[in-house]
Length: 256
Image (cartoon, rainbow, N blue to C red; front, side, top):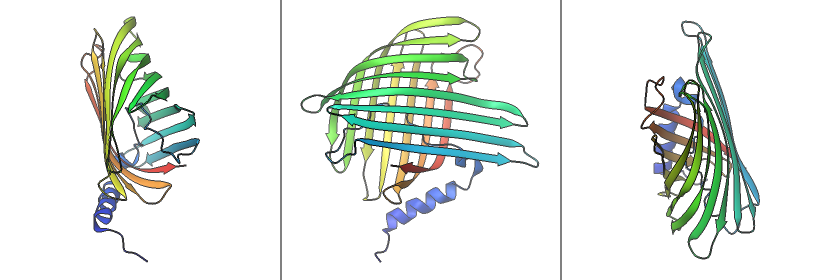
């Protein structure tokens, strides 16, 4: 039986060590970048990712966390469609401290050469971010700058529309200018690093999202991932105490 490569063993050992911390065990994979990658020639017509996590602490600390995420992708000719959903609930001593929901649909149409068109709609509800809900619709042009065995890089930009419903201050209908990038570096046969960033500019604020992830593949279905996500709102609602949310996680991914 061949011995595992040292770099992969080190990555797996590091992720497993970090996964022992209860906070990181409760956070599932996040993906702020909405462009599905270009389909490979042998890609299945239908595929998906799924995660479900639950942690409960009792005794001196009484808390529980429930989080579930799913991503479905299917191919139709030159179109790639994706649908994803997320839910997260955190409570401590019977008081809820986090409650988030997200549903998003996305399509990508391949043009000749390294070009594509995209469009997506996203609905978000975050009980503790000052918004009752946010509904966004964005479309535009993307370019596949790199696409080889080692590096993948996508850039995209386009206009859009966002409807913000604030709990205390009514509704806002905003024009959006959107830009994003998605970079992936396969530095090993079994591991890769991914950097995703997106920016949404409006006359009210700028929302930026960043995800840095290290993934080690265990087999064709399972992977271990260590990731850090940042979401920054340059001008959040008045009843929100922080402009930036940080999430660090170690998770087990299942793909089919």
